[in-house]
Amino acid sequence: SSARCIGFFFAWLLLTSAALQAQPLSCNSPLNHLAPGLGIIINQSPSAADIDAISDANVMSGISASMQTLLMSQSGTYSLFNSWNAACPSYSQSYQFAQNVGAKLSGSDPGNLNSLAILTVGSAIANSTSFGFNATVNGSAIATQLAVLATQPFIDRIATAIYDVNMLQATGPNNTYFRAIIGNATLGQTYQAYVSAAPYINQLVTEIQTSQPNATHKALLVTYKLQKMSMAAYSAVAALYTQNNLPVYAGVWNDLYSAAQFQQSPLLTQVTQQINQATSTSSLQSVGYGAYINRVTTTYGAGVQGFVSGPLGGLGLATGTAPNNVSRCTGVAGTQQC
Image (cartoon, rainbow, N blue to C red; front, side, top):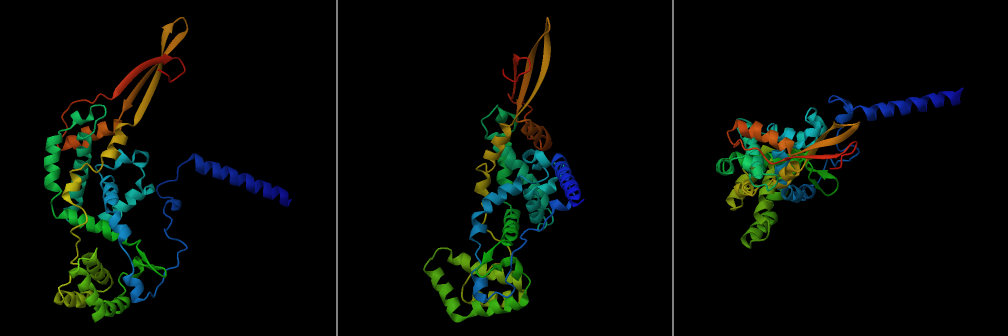
């Protein structure tokens, strides 16, 4: 009967749901790769004013947080901060973000980024105050190496790659999305005419001469957008802006992240959280006459300890001193209370 069929269907649905909950999705499951932004209606023909109104304010304010995410998602640091899915990183948005940024880097930049990440975590450990972990690393050597690496030009290229990836989510009025105008030469020509008009240029010049907030960045953002849309349009406007003493984006942002920020242990909070992570094991020990006691061993920061002996040790930056991160206690059999 139809009622029996419906009953069988719901029984199958419940069993299937329970099975999915009981077993994690495989790394290759299509459910792990759903396309973002489904249901969004994107304006395919925005006006020049709409394009001009696309803001990078959220991108700029999020550079520091994005840099932290990137540093925690490198090959030398990922497992420390993402132990829950180290075997299947495609679950992680931070991993996907790091992959997208990494795809924009070339040459020695990816290797330098990984070294930078390891040193930044090492700096945080050296500045930590829990369980004696700061004594496990050579803080002075880490600070010296980090200071040198953080002043290299590749930092600007990494920050620019972060900016490029995050700008894909930038929007303007009337459902205008920056990612939808990239490579659109026709829109590039339209925007070129808009930002080449004398009133527009005069306004930019006035804002810069009167030191209006973000005036220089505004001019740079105009030429950044053009460079992403059409190199022909970009070149024409770049020449015009140069004639009017206006700044022109030249392919790399050089003011997004400073070397001083690396010296301030930007990952100290995250590393401290890992140090305070506790793992406990217990075992029953007979004391005779059928009585037992429960021995509990708690280790704090096991992942950080592994990082010190692994990536940092590989760079010769571990001191060999063990942290004071293990506690043992005895409680009543069958309990975890000590």
